[in-house]
Image (cartoon, rainbow, N blue to C red):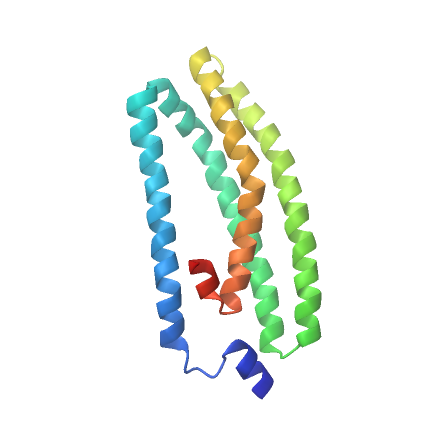
Length: 173
């Protein structure tokens, strides 16, 4: 048990220190996400045009869905590792981490493939409702975002694992 306490800091005295470690990255993440939304709305809408802003908004539900899916997978992986930590099962931690890597890579591949079909369906469903220029801009916007989505999933899983290991300073750096 002393090994577990020293390895994972589970003696309860670290709560305030951990909160101080978690709050700055959470604020930075939220502010950067809000900045991204503002840039999409203000810059794209004002400098590129209304069709570009419409294309961002057409694609946004897919971005949100894949983001939720990424958090769901990362939460499951982190919970599995946390359960092993709580049981003092060091071999289980190693097995679960290996399983997490496989799950993360398979999920990233699934998301990469799935989103192509979802975007094609979304664009097909908009034909006749929006201009051809908006459809073209949606395709262009979606390609850039779709390339980053699998990496976003891998990043989210990694962040959750660093959080349960108490390595918030690594995230800040």
